[in-house]
Image (cartoon, rainbow, N blue to C red; front, side, top):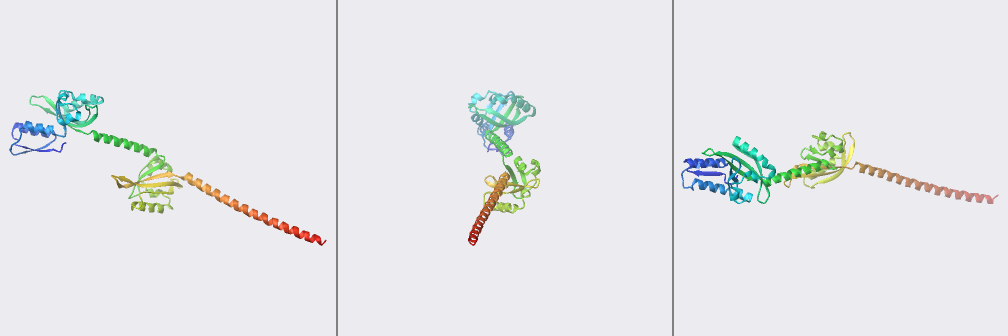
Amino acid sequence: MSPLTKLLVLGAESANDALLVAELRALGYEVAAGVQGALPSDADLYRDLVENSYDLICTHDTEGKLLSVNAAAEKALGYPRDTLVGRYLQDLLVPETRHLFGTYLAEILEKGSAHGVMRMCNAKGEVCDWEYHNSERRLPDGARIIRGLAHDVTEQLRAARELRASEQRFRALFEQAAVGVAYIDTPTGKLLEVNHKCAQILGYAHGDLAGLSFEQLLHPMDLPLYEQRMGQLLQGEVPDFAEELRLLHREGTSVWVALSVSPLLRGGARSSRHMAIVLDISQRKLAERQRETLEAQLRQADANTEIARQDVRTVDVGRDEIKGLFRSAMRYW
């Protein structure tokens, strides 16, 4: 509806005035009758209203032939008005939706009104989405015409389609990610949603993690570190954080993970949710422990070798002393 939605019609006493009020109300305007005053004629007022409306207004007969269009509709379609009047509305629809026009006509002639979205094609070949609220009017001679009132919602619907596509891409990324992803309610720590990889890392079925808190999944020895870091995040001391710590597998074993936590934003501000990225580093930790064990064994082997070398040197010194004593004793024989 255009900004002009409330009208005061003065002197609405005659039949023509009453008809004008009825027509304005049928178009969706709120009309109040007032006292007699100097006004333009009914026809001039009605014409001025229609021509200066931001709404797309037209009339067509029961077969779809356009009887009138206003300036807004003329501009939106890009055709001169004299080429639009007499043309069939269904011919202005995109080809793939023209077969639905018969259903639209049947509904409006049966129920007296119809509401929906028409996909129009303008003079440049561009597709325009018009949300319409159309109604039937019976003329004094019994003829039936359709009053059309529409709004161009092309941009709104395009934005909605792009949002849905973006959400679908994000959902695919979320579910197919090679790392675990969890959305967590910040005040309670409850898991709101986790992907399949996160459940796999922890040994749970995908639906079994719902309702658990993230703190329940932390190794008791690593819980204080997590709480400290979350406190820093909530106080705004850090924008996010990353730590290596242990989570509890469903079977009770520990799983080493690289954990990254960041708040979720809404409208540029922090929301009441945060996101945790979980990367399983168990194999890396196992390799590190094996390396440390081998290094310790190597150090012990080096120490043992040095001790053996010292023992050999001691034995050599003792042998030389015995030989010297033996030579001295031989001189007395």
